[in-house]
Length: 87
Image (cartoon, rainbow, N blue to C red; front, side, top):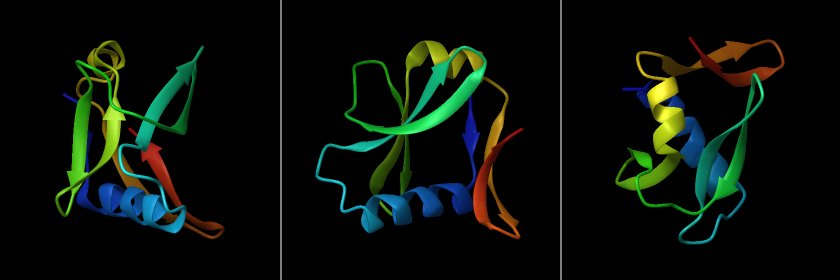
């Protein structure tokens, strides 16, 4: 199972709050070829969900979740600001 740290889910919640994401919109990991990106999207059947303080903040497609099994998403502080990393 993909693991997402508390720092990462907190960051995702701040992004949703900052952008005033409407109810039913979450951040989704999107894969195009070898690259990953984050998009706003609704929840679909079979999605893995991740929460922060009782709010769903991240959804991951069932197939992509299987691909990412055993990996971690964390938040890294960098000179240009915080960024999410997949390890």
